[in-house]
Length: 230
Image (cartoon, rainbow, N blue to C red; front, side, top):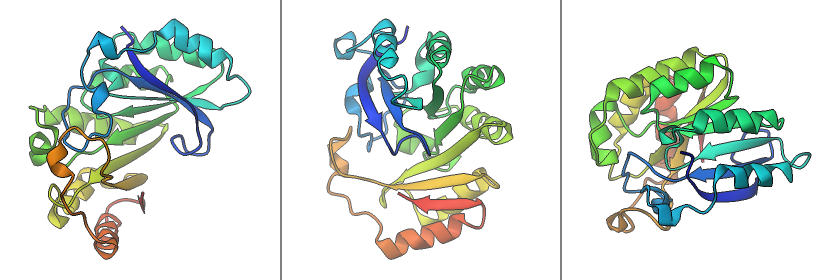
């Protein structure tokens, strides 16, 4: 199974220092209210637009035009054929960036150990004790912790990132997140953008001011080597 809900031919911003194509996998095990790809959350086959042979055929037309492929979602590690699909992508000469929520460390371990991923971006939703509040599902936070540790101990490039909305995360929460990813290489704070989202009740919520975001960055810089605001 490798369900594809969409493709973006070219991106200059989603894979650091590379020109990339993006594949959006269909299906996610979280239900974050601020999710800006709500059409990708379910495993509804009506939302599947491509299969992997279609995508590989498309990639062959991008050889020499792009450097890598971003696999995002949804949650890509829910795709049972992700392993084989990445091998096919890499056989075409592309590097691979994987976006993940970290809920499937066993799958991540396999991909990392076999050198199938060149860059990982993992979403840190909240301090571990607030994961259910943000994701609206039960989460085994031991898996989240395992993924963080594994990624930080790997030899590949990575980043952690958090989408921020004032009503969901406090300054103290960022102290706890900082401790969670202490000594990480890179951490990005992503401002909540009010567009199409899973929970429309969040559309009217105020976010932090620019000065407050700077204060959040200062908190995190005590724990992480590089902190940036997106």
